Length: 393
Image (cartoon, rainbow, N blue to C red):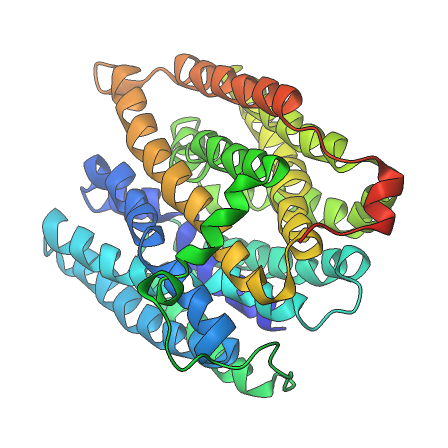
């Protein structure tokens, strides 16, 4: 339930933010608004992961972040509604991001820590986050009729309040280690997770996650705008089609991970990403809908598998920081370069005020192909038998 409502809080505003900004005359700040989460990712997640591992309980940290997210998300959408201007909207978006960015990784760590067999149990549980995200899109389009309205942001605030309440219902869990009396700045900021990058497979997974997220940064800000250019009114609900394939993959993930080497699962995820943008290149409604459907396969097979990879192959005392470091690499480095770079690329692809969508998505397809080739050559991994009988620390 926590996962579902938390994802709902994010899905109410995360999918259609670009459309809301465009409807209020702020289309020019779309890439910068999305990039705010990337800047926050350099500051918040590692510190929050360190608090969760060493000092505060993850429940308490999530509760605190949820309160801040609610307050500043409300102010952000109020600024959009009242026409305070681009500067105020971006400032409030950035402050909101500082509170919001670490929350989903922290929820993931919190839930994984309560599972006896994450490889088999996490997929079905993670499905509920997908259901929550999809439900938010359906509600925005069919109930709230807020595809271009600030009402979607206010609905997200209500979902956040429910999420905060649910943190009080979680069962208690014994801490893995006691807080240290004296901790270095490196430990306080969570930077002691960085040595994970010295392991070759860990390093390739982290770097590939960042590179794939650069390409993924085009999906949510600009797919909605492409759908609207093709005449689709309920674009937010259409974007939820990707969650159908995500649910299918989540339910099958345990069987897939049992039968296939991680390398092939990761490559399948990236491959679906290539196919998704190749379909977008065709610039038709049917191709775009099919491409959105493939997004769920891409996201689950790579990013959810990466979370399970960290849970299985990183020491227990480092897991929250490992998940936080993953957030830094994806939401930080990947999204920052992705949103800003792709924002520039979209301007480059515009002619007389209109986006040349085939040209735009061709660039994204080539970028994702490059990520596929890099991972195929760089990741060595271990045999399936070794995966089943050992753990890396």
